[in-house]
Amino acid sequence: MPGDGGEATLLKADGSAPGTPNYSGPSDKDELIRSMARALRVAFKMASMYNLDHPAFKSSVNELMAKLEAIFVYISPLSIGFSPHALLIDNRLWEGERTYQDLAQLFHFRKIKRLEIRPGIPQVEFMRFASKIMLPVKAFVKEGGAQAIIKKENILYISLDVLDYSQVLLGEGEEIKDIWPYLLMEAVEEDDDTKLGQLAGSFEKVVGKFNTEDLIQNEELHKNFSKFFHYLKATSGEKHRESLNPHAEGGKYLPLIGCPPPQLLDEDDEGVEALDD
Image 1: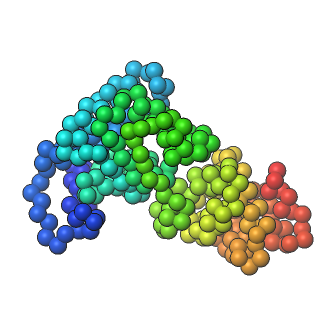
Image 2: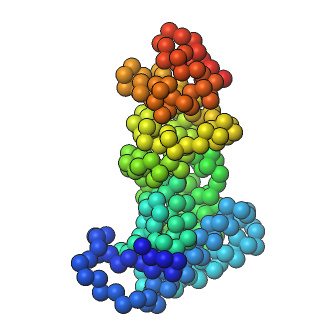
Image 3: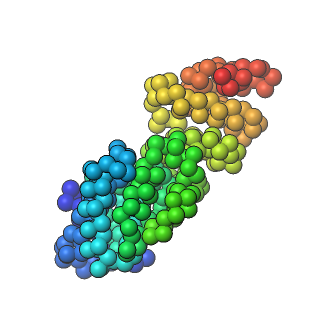
């Protein structure tokens, strides 16, 4: 794996590793990619901190525009793919450096699989896009997610592909632990039984990774878990019974949301009403 120098792993156009890489070190294009990625990270960080009129945000995007203009000479349009921990640019995997990890997590967390930026993008359009993408999670969900933002803001020079729930939840515990509460929030906000069912299918993979203190102290997460367990109760039968088992990994969370496991498991008991409080 590359070190802090951010060296890229050369891949074939189909994304697979070649048998004998013909790679002699950094080129001008490689340095432009590194520089662009760092500027992109700073611009999104500024978008999360400041409004559209703030000089620091404007300055960071102005710097990014210069980097993009230079890189369009080599790569046009610029396509950036996102895995949980790495970027895919120019058919190569860029990983190991903090910049790549931060950008990958930022976009993966928002279920964005690929971003395409086209030449000629106005600075103000990128700023509108970045500001909406970096909204607090609940506000981002209320906007309808990344594709809805593209449409509502009339973004013409940026397009993207998004991950669906089934793709995101294919990962293992650590890989999906951070995004799982966000997906839960989205499913609860949309009152979407299909998404709740998909989350239920992955719950056993991630439940042991959660910090119980977070569940107690985070009011929003607490509320969403309550609604999730209510969904499991309402659709249980044998399908979700293991998630509600007080002796299973997930069972330890039931008392934390105000509902003792034996009551929740009893089909005739009204203890489940505590989930609505």
